Amino acid sequence: MRKITTMGHTKKKTFSCEKCGKEYRVLGCLKTHLKLCTIEDFECEECGEGFATQAALNVHKKAHTIRKCDECGEGFATQAALNVHKKAHTIHKCDECGEGFSRKAALSVHKKVHIIHECDECGDEFATQAALSVHEKVHIIHECDECGEEFAEKAALSVHKTVHNVHECYECGEEFPKKAALIVHKKVHNIHECDECGEEFAEKAALSVHKTVHNVHECYECGEEFPKKPALIVHKKVHNIYECYECGEEFAEKPALIVHKKVHNIHECDECGEEFAKKPALNVHKKVHNIHECDECGEEFAKKPALTVHKKVHSVHKMIPTANADGGPALESYW
Image (cartoon, rainbow, N blue to C red; front, top):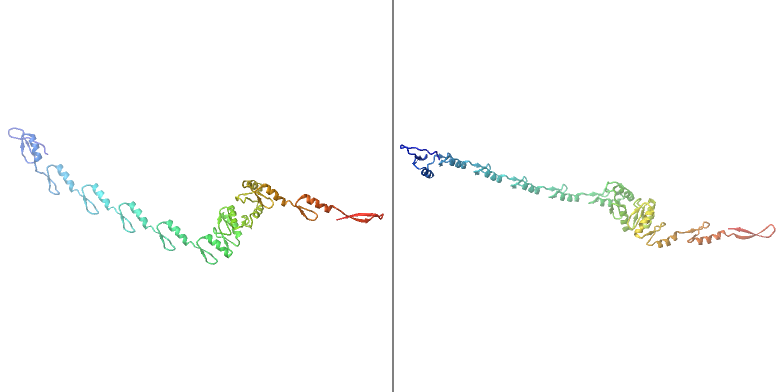
């Protein structure tokens, strides 16, 4: 609305409309008129539409300020609306198949479908590296140098090589002409293998207990084998090893083993290794080893009194009559 002015020839105050020139004596009438006056002095240069005020024209002009999308040409009245629209054109495409995703994270998840793990040996493909690693073990072939036979496991090849009298350590590949030498060597790798079935153990004592299944009792110090456990126990004394055959625990000293065996209520004979559940039974057995031998003839007796009686035979001098100087009889002793 323009500034209201007053004019007139009779010095009466009047109010005129700046748009159409009509005059009113009452200001209130002019204000009512101005609301209805349709003369438009402010015209839009873009479309020719007219407006009563500059402010109205300015508001209208914003409709012609179009923000166009570079991708599709669609126009928007505000920059915010254009920005929201542009997200529809922000497509993350998969290089492998061309599939598009509105979010980059979704594309990253999708790309895993195209990550193929291929086996170099046979070309078989797997979705994960772990699955490929498991598969590749099929192609790990262990071949016998002697006959060309192949095995999936190196341990199986080592057992096979014994046919060719070659005993190979599958840990380092070193070969030995005798199994005993291989057994001693394997101690370097802390591997204790059963000669009968090839089963391996981390501890020597565990192998010794296992070998009883095959009725073979082997000394893990030197590899010597025995058909009976007591014989092995007696043998181990050579290596200063005293083993409890009940639990496999070993001792460096015999007294320690004897004390330990009381836990199992086992009483062992020091002479032959035979064991008894009760101490009295062991005492009776020990008398077998109390042999009393005659120094003169080598005859043996179970009891000392019997030997004493026997020795009298050697201490008696057989009396043989001889002639004395006076012609009387004389006694001669001989054995």
